[in-house]
Length: 408
Ligand code: EZ4
Ligand code: CO
Image (cartoon, rainbow, N blue to C red; front, top):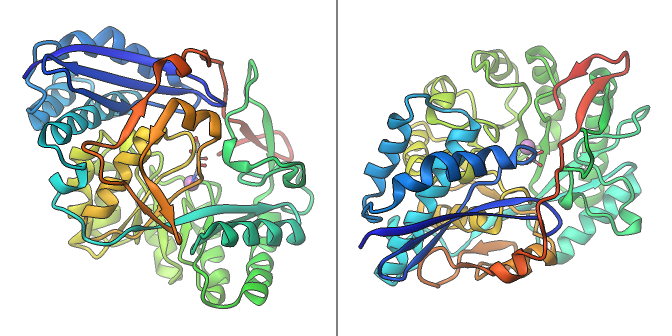
């Protein structure tokens, strides 16, 4: 079998997605997600202009060799654009291999280690009543674990919080906004640190001690601020505190870890195992947050999780709606197969997105399952996709109240 065609497809059913389609002379087709929110066309160009022709004539079964060829062969290693492009190729080849084997992909990764993958959803509200409503909605949908993001007194816009959920706005479809330039959000870390523990106290009082609760700090704290928050949240028994600091400085986590037993999750903006080296070997985190789509695909993610397992660190694969259903399916096959699964983020895609991407994964009683279709189990409808042309969208930027740009 050889690769005969590699097409890069961009569609925008409510938000932008980049998908690689690899076709073989046997007529098998594999899909890979190459979506990098807010910088989509850079990955599309990387694939179209620099990778597609290299794939033609290759044996699609040689996944490891193709991965190394693209990673080492580029000479310029790592980085989100390169690693998203390589991920798309890797996942598309795994899709083809599993289809050729007539098995769902998880079978090729070692088979199922569990009946389903525990998912967490995103509840949010500017005030406690709307936050409580959002939590109840998620419980009704079957979620057994919930991320909590709340407004902060004095701030008009806050990461992770739907502005008008009563108007039917779901935070899930955000935050890439369709505008010629990024929108601006505000931030005040001290106000946030004063407020968040009161929110978790109220949520625990209302919903009891059992429900696993998560929170995303979104890279906004210094190490000592993160340590303080982790400590303040200990009475509320979080499942994890995510991205408490901008963790490209891995050493920062030593200070946080010294001060708190709140479990820590990091890595949605990382793109290789090297980004985790200190964090894993020094056991500074509890959950690896990488997305399959942004970390080079299934091949390196399996290695990364096996490495993490030696230190009792678990998975918490990134699953926002800017990961396409193809990237989501790839995550679910890994979730089912690896031993050190922790939790899977699941925000649910919009109906328009699910018209383009026909998925066979399921969400039942709070657990996700990739389904039993051969391959990834996702089909891409090109006719529907063509109805939704690319539409530029940016993530917001964040400014402190005095105008200083802060981490978003
Ligand atoms: O803001 O993927 O934990 N989830 C997140 C996400 C990120 C988006 C950015 O594109 O932090 O919602
Ligand atoms: Co996050």
